[in-house]
Amino acid sequence: MVDPGLFVPGAQVVLEAPLATLPRAMSVIRGWHPQRYLILDPPSHKGMEVRFEPGVELLVRLIRGEKLASFHSRSLGRVLSPALLLLVEYPQAVEYGSIRRGKSFPVLFDASFCAGPGSPLPGSPQRCMILSLSEDGCMLQSESPQAFGAQIPLSFVLPEIGAVTGLFATVKSCQRGNPAWELELVFNFDHQEPSRLIRDYLRLLDQRQLDNAMLRLSSLD
Image (cartoon, rainbow, N blue to C red; front, side, top):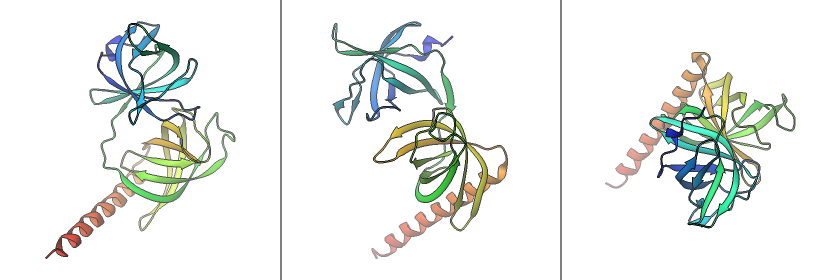
């Protein structure tokens, strides 16, 4: 049973259509009918309305306290009266995760993962590119989508630090990019070595950012 107290009128939500070529959109909760539907403002992206037609599968996320709530839903279409609104299916279940705490750094290096269920070649190793990295997770670019909530093994080499292996991550979002898919992953640390290596690498990046800032400052003298 999903707690209706999660859906506070005025709360901001993010909507994604993982299987459609539509941008991530922002909206606001206006109300709900328990166990039937949620009522949202028309979703928008960069000031333009995003039309989620009836039947489009959705991933919906919102912040509740210090937790990130995520659930699957489906567009039920727009209503025009008493105002233009979007109806989406009331969720059957909600997943909660911690809000990412660590500072995220832009990076660009190769990685590989083992494709999860629902991918074109489940169980097969796939190459990918990590685009950003924090202590808690990463954003990567992949040639194929991965299911929301899938647990995938991930491996990569951190420049000047070493290889990270035996690391599992949970897919938190999968967005169609151009031309590849962008996946947001949260790390699951079963043992401390991958966590230590990632922390060491991020400290290295942080120190270099500080050194560069000091160099720019000294050049102004």
